[in-house]
Image (cartoon, rainbow, N blue to C red; front, side, top):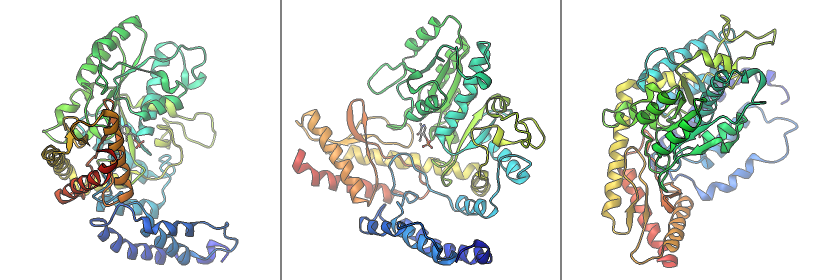
Length: 479
Ligand SMILES: *Cc1c(COP(=O)(O)O)cnc(C)c1O
């Protein structure tokens, strides 16, 4: 086989093979271990030299399915509590395949009116879902990292404008460092975004009042006042990754208003607190922000890669990310223009389709029910932790993350840290459930996050049972 043209009628049959593999794989997710150490050897089957003569469509797809279904991390299943990892709802998964089938370039209206319209609709649905007022716009991007990048790119353009500079044309040359303030909850990806934008990752000045990272509002206000009216950026963290805590967005909005600062909210998963009356107070004040970043591949449960930035003044997107000057491309304001000119990527897939389908399928109420189920499951997990004599909860549970550790009376702090690290490593190696460690307030801890639509109470109970079993097994060396 040498040329795909010779295989041109093979696509539908190849898709049928994927469909045939999908049933057993999806059915297995509920019970399957997160990873199967025994299958690791199969990964070698991906390698070898670049094929000189291809095996043909069917053989290649079969091989991929065989290796993939055996060796994939079952992170879209209900027992993956590491990082903050959602799965794919049935509608989102089917629409993701549809995006592959239609292979749209969501660069602009001129490349796909369909993808452009779907993205416009979806951005407005997301805005509405999280309770932002009409008039906000945005862009779909690959991740919350890119959403932070997009929003802080707009903030950079705004900041330059307020200093009489055009950073889009001239970059940061000749300007002082852009002042950026945040609490200790600031996520590594916001720093990475600042790093990519040329400000450097240490551009963030952290105003924290304790070892956990709670924001020091007075300290931040002193720093803002010291700028003497020069523009600055504040990053509010709506949902931090260790315990799911929130900066007081409303108070930060107040500071931003008083000192004329740009308020950016990183709500990668925490933004979805807006969906439940039980937690909406946590994001009160986001409507006073200038930009908001979030992920759809976390709590919205659409496949990777899916993040979104929402911007109060959407016109800034075209200013910050347009590409004027290429004669064959439309400009951001041209009728043929579109989202490739409103964000960091140019050619891009129609990542609106899974979001459109999942919101169409389950609606606001379906998502509220899912979020509230996860709140209940986090409460159940906290209760199981509190019940277990060798487990100690380290933080309140405002949302969907439970931060705790294994403990025993009389063990020195360093020994406890080593034991908890050992439990974290044992959990990852075991694979029945999946969760890693963090350092919270100076102490090594586990921090399972519950955002997968498939997760039930039985999965949480299994998680606690496995943690206790592995704590016991590793205790010999530490306790
Ligand atoms: C996950 C996360 C990010 C980064 O998200 P990616 O999708 O991995 O880029 C940023 N901020 C917070 C608070 C997060 O939880």
